Image (tube, rainbow over all chains, first blue to last red; front, side, top):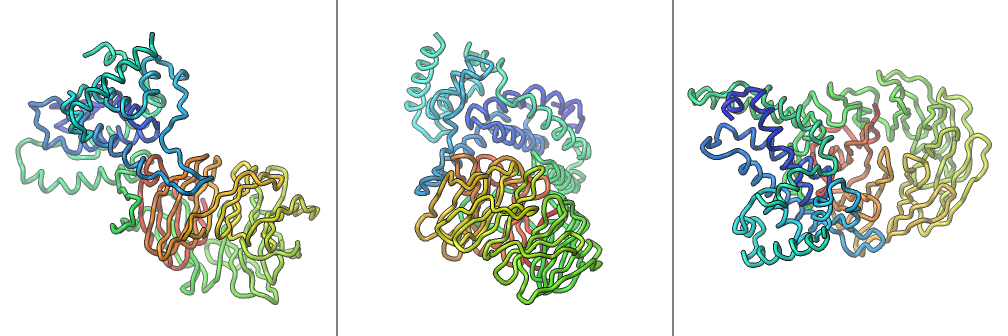
Length: 164
Length: 369
């Protein structure tokens, strides 16, 4: 972190290798779109880099980056849903990628999570990949905490069923 | 961390490795472009902050995957103005052609250059070596340096010159007919009756075929032996015709509907414009089968990206979009909005990644390598 703060490329390289993959994976699980995930993770990382001067070194970098990425991915998923064009029948939008071939993913757990509906998949990704607490997820998603807990529970139940 | 968390952290998401390879150098470049930071010396930091921001922003702007950081436009009517393109940049590269009463202009990364006088329309040759321009009843071939190579004239005004992908011929409309002339100005000959939309050359290797509108029909004709390959009746006069890069789909834009035909003229899909809206133009992307559509509703224009069954409304702006064309690499899209040119980078979920305006000198015509 100190090296990165000094503008040392090696320090940034370490930060990138340590934190970018989880950021990308979480973004992908939320938006289920490779290009979107790439941009979200990249935007988030660069935004974090730009703000290194203001960064409080007493706090770990990972959670900070993950919060940026989570917010951007959630915004992207919401914006995408809002952009569905309705009433244009033959060109009807199917914005959410329901056509993902879950079994084609190399990892069965990732495939099972990816196949969950939005309301379960996003809380699961935030909780188990990014490490947010249910309270933090409730704040990010603007939902009551109880709703988040029940969605997490239903998601885990669905995963358990899919993987056993 | 839960077992599920460990499994998810160990997994690789689709596209992750390739994305890592693209993002990694960008991150390093962003920091190496910036001066070393100091915890002390806040005055120096304050002095350098704008420079650092500018360098990072420039890095993002010039890096394809990061270009969207530059600006983000919601699909609501844009009240925020797009950023003007700096004199030494042109997102998407290549050379943009604009035409108007001020003359024919070529805009590249080096800035705009007036190459010819007042023209009506203009189109690049496939490799950008020449421009075919119209001036009333005259068709003129001009080099990018502005040298007039040849010209011909008809009795009626000439419109919609379009160079064949091979570069050997130019198709154009005049007086209710479509004509073909060789790229050197020779062998000017009528091909058939045509009107309305600009003719569209089919990108098919080993063939020379031209689609054009004739009343309420779309005709595909072989330009070597002049055989009519198909003539498909459509509902209204086509406003725009565009082939997919593989030459297997023809987009027919009509005022109130879109039709997709296959290479044999069979109708694959019809889409009606919602009530109160009108289609203006549409074009296939430079590769693949995604296409872009412009619709108007009242005084505003709406840009939509269509990919398979998905339609994304990506931009709605006050004013009329008269023309659209993709950049040579196909990663940027130029919109002719009155006498200005908007450059947008079609992208993923929200559709737009960067929006810039080019101070144009006339209407958008074409974009060449």
